[in-house]
Length: 312
Image 1 (cartoon, one colour):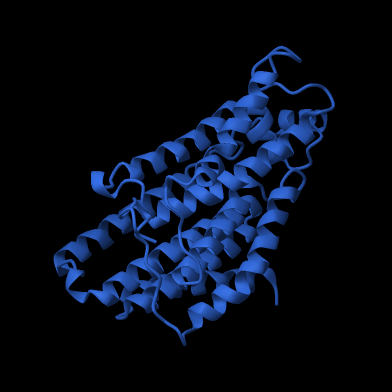
Image 2 (cartoon, helix red, strand yellow):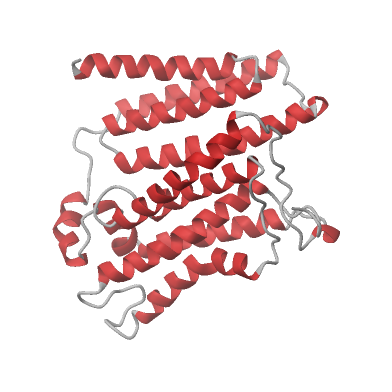
């Protein structure tokens, strides 16, 4: 099969999956097709040469977001009265706005200059000094390390914002995410078979991210998706938000990032600067700590605010 034929088939599948997820009458069917849609988009990003974006799309678009939508669909299945379908005019307006955004983005892509200004050449020339083989990791942890640190702090603040939505009497309890009651369904089977594979793959993505596409965010997202899957299947429970190990896991990434950043004042004398010859080991340590924090934070963001001191 030639590449143009494959690309045309992939485009057709993406459009078909998108239309199916919108037109599906069953909410759970729409969610499953949406997850497939995300995986197809990840394949499209691979064809465009953006492997890191493809991994993020698969982990976020199909992994964590898919688990969140499955949880929402199960909630409405237990309480159909809570589901209020938008009117036909609202759906038509949403479709019109989405189409307008798609046309605008497509127009902007066509208006891009042929030779856009880029610092890619300078980045690739300086990359060997960091010991990293992945230019994306080099940009994130060497040339834009301060931005990367702030992104992780934003995740932490987002979690605090979600926790602040809990009622005063519920503070200190566990999140309210309930398992899907499917003792004979496919979900418990997946929750018993996928986590070992997901755990191995998530750790590999983090470890290999210094040299090949991957990294802490992609690896942490995969681990979060596996955690949510196990909880939704009823095989585990979310801990209370007052759990000491949970607090340490949430703060581990930003804390390690800051410690290594302040250590740069000692040598070579700048914040978030790495001693010569130690850049790669220090970056790998930061990525491992960030993977833990990202996995825990994303899982807790999906779980929602505490529901009560006795909630599990």
